[in-house]
Amino acid sequence: MSWPRALGTVVATLSGAAILALSTGSASLGSSHDRSEFNRAAVRSYLDETPGVPLVLPRTLPASYRWLGPDAAQLNWRGWVVVRSSVFVPGPIGSGPIVTVCIEASDPSQCPRETNEVIRADGSGARVVILFSGVEPTRQDLEWWDSVELGDPFDASWLG
Amino acid sequence: MIAKIRTLTPIVTALTAFVAATGLVVGPAPHAGADSSGQPTPEIAGEVIGPGADATILVPEAEIDRARNEAADETEAELTNTEERAQDMLLDASERSGGTLTEDSVDAFSLVDGDVVVAMPVTIDIAQVKIDVDDGYVDVSVVANEVETPLAQGSGPGMAPFWGNDGDGDYALIVKGMGDALFKWERDVLRNDGSSAYTWYSYKRKGDAHPFERSGPNARVAKLRVQSYPYDQIEKGLLNWVDWEPASDFSGNEGAPVTLSVSALGIGTVVTFADRDKYKVWRNPNNPGSYWIEMDQGRFIDSGSRSAGYAVVWKAKQGTPGSQHDFQRVVFFYNSGDYYCDEYDAGDTCTPNGVDH
Image 1 (cartoon, each protein chain N blue to C red):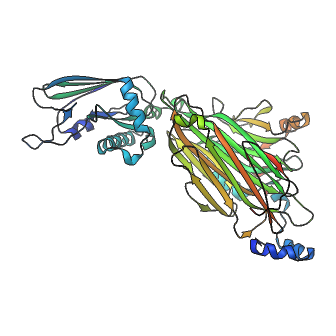
Image 2 (spheres, rainbow over the protein chains, first blue to last red):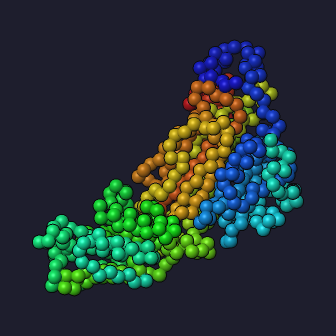
Image 3 (cartoon, rainbow over the protein chains, first blue to last red):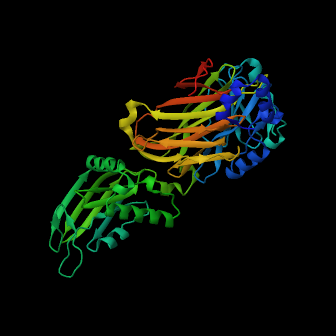
């Protein structure tokens, strides 16, 4: 349920019970929404619109992390995506590093580069560059992203 | 590369004949006037060309560069009819040969007080234009530096330009007890563009705001603004806008992904976000790179995260940095109050102020 701005003033004068009654209608987000604003249909739509190098996602997510969805992509002269990235953030922001997963099938490299990064292969010849920003990653962060299974987005257990 | 034409009137035929395979149109511009047969009579440097006339004019590289830079500052509507016609001919020739030239990748300009018009890919550098008038016939010779052209790029991917990362970063805005927002920026520069005169930059921004989980109702994201504009110090080197998305205000599609693609010289770069609610955009037409987008839920405010983003491309003189200032703002709505946080070129943690904004 939407909160009308005009009603907001009225709500402020009502009891706490009234506020709770309003919030009941504001559908609590399901668990998959807690991990991503994008669902499988949205990912399918995105991939249909931007053919090229595969989108690679981790099979599982670290606790408290959300996927912000596809972020940036670079096209080649044929109009095919040769680089695409997506971003994972901890909740709240600042409680861990912001993680960017960049997949590239380009030479020279077009992914952003950072001091802290993990470079992996996705099995199809594409290179996966995992970058950390905001907060310095711990050794556990680096190890987790170095070992988590990466693959087809539709195999990701957390994607709604 | 040397391109040369020998022509007499009519000029249209001359120009048509001068579409070279390398992508270049050059020729004497038509002027008012006609000979006794009614044919248009061209002029070079103020003299009507007719049988028996002789002259040689050399146009140096500095004069060519000056004319070219002036033309680069002009809008499409400011092209002369002859420049526009030369540009159209080059674009037609490019299309017929499978090339990727667009209006943005072609320079059209006049030399010798408008007596000679040139249309050429932006990636070609001209070292000299020589105009010989020999017994009324006009020879125009162009010496172009050997550089890669978009037409040539059509022959293989190894020669093609590509967007290379030229910097990126992120900022976090946190409103204590309400929510947080991540704002990203990424600047790319077109590599392998073949031009020693120009540089193309793309700048992509994206913001994503997320209410915290509370024991009571969560706050809601009322507004989200993402903005960037060039440093004062680089404005002199900025030439013109090339591409920008979104191009106008729009309403979101219930969280479906919106994929915004902008390009330079036919090479695209993309930013994607989940669009909901209403978005307003603004662009300063006189300041390439100056742009903002704002998501505003308006009178009725729904729950959940909200995102906004944009991608822009501009052309600058070679050697001009792509430095941009960033501005970001998030407004959370909770219990009749707006709680905002904003910052230039940085993140911030804000204490809820409860001030309606």
